[in-house]
Image 1 (cartoon, rainbow, N blue to C red):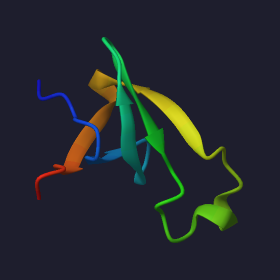
Image 2: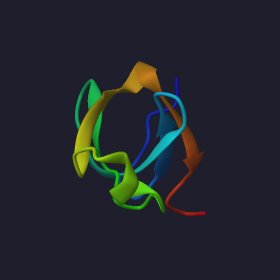
Image 3: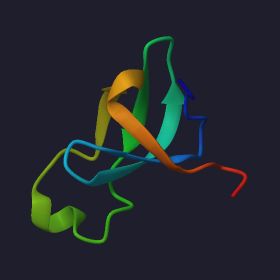
Image 4: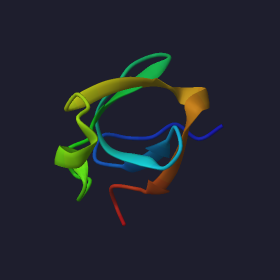
Length: 62
């Protein structure tokens, strides 16, 4: 299992995307404000996701 790094973009829970801000032992903290429709979704700016629950879309190095 690949673990995301700070700066990576991940996808989780039915297509939500987030920017990884912190990597913990079992999870990452992501910023959801990068999504174009963030304001329409009425969700929190940040959330915690277990490493098993996301897919890495883009690594920080490209």
